[in-house]
Length: 479
Image (cartoon, rainbow, N blue to C red; front, top):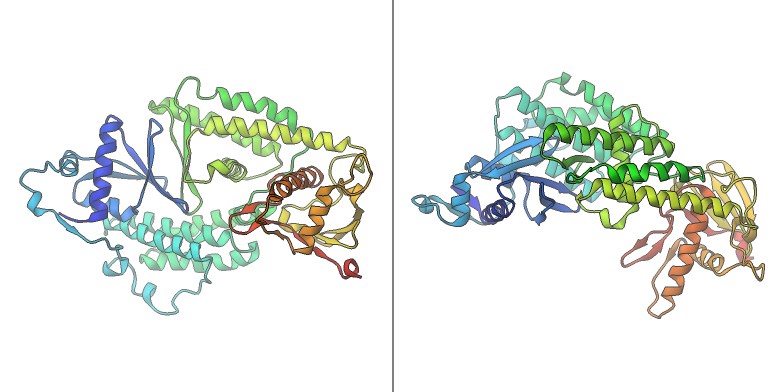
């Protein structure tokens, strides 16, 4: 046996957990936040390994391994259990432990010669993290093909895996028109990497073009999903909340496990497959209803479910990792939060300093990135959304002190944010707690006024609060 020390350590972890969970299968998923093992009873553990480490354990017949919907699942074999425990009588001398090394696909005759030619790929670079995820996807696809190098279905699976990883990174970073112009080159890169037939990706290219167009139509930018909360949403989410909460009906709650490339798998829930299928369908129907209520429209129902789960992670700082452990519970809690935000927007509309018949201004950005604010003076701002402009004073905006009728402290903080070009760095003294309170007030006013309910002023470690909208001062402000 030829294992790295990392693979041997992974085997020991798999064997130890196999005993702890009573022989249930593990699920391996990898997301940009790291890799992990998950079991049906909810147990999970982070691990430092790649798909290739698992494939090597499978080749040595130490584990079983099955690929399903971009996630891997399996169990230690009897031989793997003995090796992991150090009880493999008679074969110990045959186990070779070597230093860790990344498996290089260039050492295997799996890729076409064109893939390694300088300048062969016309694709532009994405983010450093995106380039790394694409590289990992290529290695993972090569690992799939290693299992049966001559099998047409394995080759097709490898091509689709690589193509989807490429497409996801570019659809999240490019305008629709640019992505559509690039889709043929993306397909050619994936196809030529594994000497696949040209017709392999015809349907998948159409899928990703539709994905790009519907993302744009729904105002989705990058990995951010916009939200537009209105007062009437309170009743809708009040009804959806108990339906999500009751859904497990005494069974184990569902989990969502995420992998690179925008993929996720809903698992494990009930072990009875027929019950699990019914459970999953009910969850997906409720998720689709929630997305329709929020104003999203997708031709493929699976996309609505996908972006509902994305919203859960986006709006809850505790769900940023590679899995959501209690999907129905978290969805119910999110419905309660949306109901609260809807009631807040209704309350804001009734405040004396709110203008117009409704809680929102005439300008409606699809996302915070589409809004620009310029301070014209100490008491007036200009709002810009596309080609539309609107000028307001602090009271019309919603930043009037109810007692003095002067600008409140949140307006002063917003003005400081403009003077510092959209970033509030954290000071070293105790005044930061007061700044945080003012930021909360700004968020409340912005969400109620513009109807975009994700965070307009997220906090970044080491930086401070950084506006997602553009904000600054006009020349008249300094005159």
